[in-house]
Length: 337
Image 1: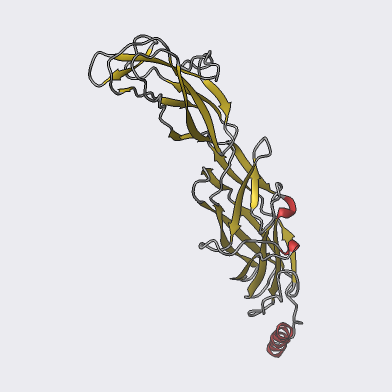
Image 2: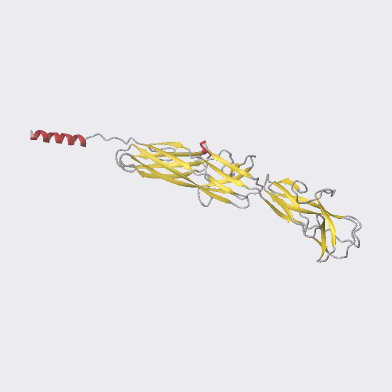
């Protein structure tokens, strides 16, 4: 009886040692998610930079023995729904289809444009290795999108965006796994290895161009010299120059100056009590007084993103007899938007 038990133990041991080797039956799946590339408020006067992160997670299931998994992946970013071209910068658009140029880079120096194999430009390449003990394992990788809205003139106000959906974002990957040990990396993110797949990581690029106006210059209004009594109307003009972002509604008003009496504008001789009355108009016929009441006596318009100018039509009416000297006034220009 004793010998019989010993023989059974030896048979069982031999059966375990001779169990046929199995190739690893594993599957690796990778997913990616991206944050939105939000530039916030930009004005085109200087570069505006921002970043957004991409997170990749790979999961392997089915391995029965200690092993390593190696994944080779490509993160592809196209033009986005609103187009623009990889090297003719990408663009965001507003509700009027105005364009705002921007670009996405693979490096913090913003010198390497992030592209896609779909149009022959360069995606971001990532290699990932992780352990898959007994029943599998997982690994994580991350990447950063470096965005820039370059300095550009002629912008229009509005909210801009460009959705990167569908084939505009592609994570292509191939993986290698073995039952025991560490395999070679796949030949590329689209060939070699044990298997692979493709997935997407949608995000949106956005920016806001605010309404803005700035006054560039306001030329002095010189009525010249008059010998003796001002016997006839003295007419002269000057020019106001300003810039407003495109589609910005503006109103330009002129106050009554520092020496007004009610609504009568006056130039003053030094610190004396001597004045010369004058008026400012919006039209060459000098029938439309220029004031500060919005919608009544201001000049309204819409910004173009480039310099705009208005003509101030001035008149010193006859007849005025005042002491000789230099008469002056200071008028404040206000741009409301």
